[in-house]
Image 1 (tube, rainbow, N blue to C red):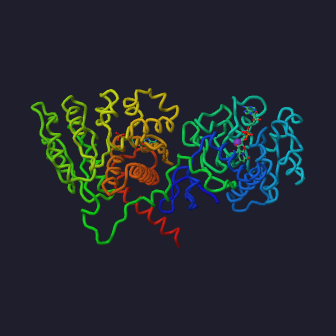
Image 2 (cartoon, rainbow, N blue to C red):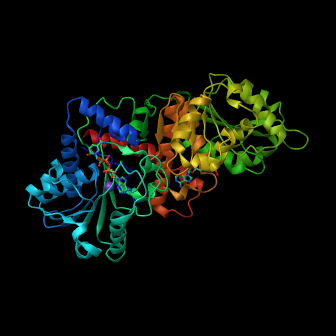
Image 3 (tube, rainbow, N blue to C red):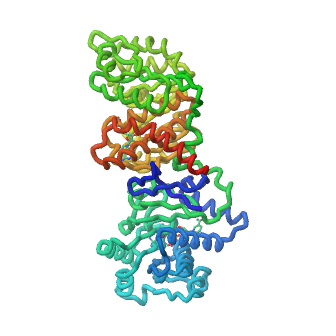
Length: 551
Ligand SMILES: NC(=O)C1=CN([C@@H]2O[C@H](COP(=O)(O)OP(=O)(O)OC[C@H]3O[C@@H](n4cnc5c(N)ncnc54)[C@H](O)[C@@H]3O)[C@@H](O)[C@H]2O)[C@@H](O)CC1
Ligand SMILES: Nc1ncnc2c1ncn2[C@@H]1O[C@H](COP(=O)(O)OP(=O)(O)O)[C@@H](O)[C@H]1O
Ligand SMILES: [K+]
């Protein structure tokens, strides 16, 4: 079994990610910490699998994946760098399997290893004579091998890294990096993870290689989706090492995957009418932020809602009406200073009873009257209307100490890092240092589904689950793309999805739309409106993938 993280979109490959997620198993989409990985290993051993079996499976699976990367593997030259622990052990088994598959193998020991251990015997039995760093003073042999090898397998350190990398391992990794500059055709593959990358935090060592492929064992590690680590793993393949199914039921983190999204997408019966697909009210916009409201309304419609209504200031009606042809309009009263009147909340509330979902916040602004309007609206909104809050709705909430005790209903919140900082009182640095854990904890404390936006967006659920976007796409870092996400999530809420499902499916569809635009025009110059037509295409593509995999 093999899993690749990435997007398949109309048979094209985007970014540096692979094209296919080629398995139906959802377990492989789980994300683990090093502690969780050790626990799973312990459970596997308790269930009757020996450590040697796991290592044999790991080494063989890695070799199989490597062979699959080449059109023709026999005769390829492969160098395996071996460290002191089990990662090195896996590397020794992989070296043996690669030789069995026809490769010309060099094994290079960066630390002394016990010749009696199971893995070492594997290479000796295959007549591979490891080169020892002690006997290769000055790395002259290593340099010579690197000048000719087709691939390097980094099996120096895995999840057991405990301190900065120094000495021979650091020097050898630096040499690989240097030769790679001269020989870009040389493929570098990490076994389990690029050595020196912290699997829990995504921190990297100075010596960590940005590899071409990371063949990870059993489960992807959280650090692959946290920066800077996320820039070092490139294409990630998850290899099956035989951990029995069912041992990971309490692992609550996952990468959002097309199969998950397909399973939760709303069904669209042929005899549907517009009432079948829910009504969304978007409460948004101000004179300064016209685009935020229009983008949210259009994306809600493009994600499949039956009817979208914009509730916005009366004096802006003419411009909104010109921009939004399909949207209906609710004209909200204003103060004599041309701000939203706080009593506009009652106007919106009186209509909202007929709506399945509301998106509140994009571009509303932060005038005191607007803040009062938002507070009145949020305190009066019925539990029957599902809710997504973004931008100025989040800013307004942040003004109330312990806001989650006052605003204690279900909702999706979609903060970027700055808004999350205001909501939580944490600094930006504290959030960036561990986005997944921070998001999980706050979602539980606040009792909300929280979408912490950015590269590899994290969706946290109050029950402890987190779902991480597989996409990092600098093209999306432009004004208005978040408003598009808000509209998509509101649309999915209106179509009947619960908060967590709407948020993770919405994040995935939005990311896929972004990847499609990147595929067309690159990662600079993307504007939020480019995403709109890609939303239904992304949904179509997800559905077609299912169709393709069924036949
Ligand atoms: N957890 C699991 O389920 C499995 C783990 N396996 C492999 O085991 C690996 C983890 O093995 P280990 O726990 O032995 O850890 P590693 O192989 O990552 O390295 C730990 C060893 O390196 C030393 N070390 C750590 N940091 C160092 C540094 N900066 N400089 C020099 N020496 C350093 C430690 O003292 C220890 O000897 C995984 O990455 C994976 O490759 C597989 O064999 C199979 C199953
Ligand atoms: N580097 C990136 N990789 C992936 N997604 C990104 C990246 N940068 C921004 N995004 C996405 O773009 C959107 C930006 O939203 P936001 O910051 O609220 O902007 P705005 O309010 O202007 O719409 C979010 O969905 C975010 O996750
Ligand atoms: K490694």
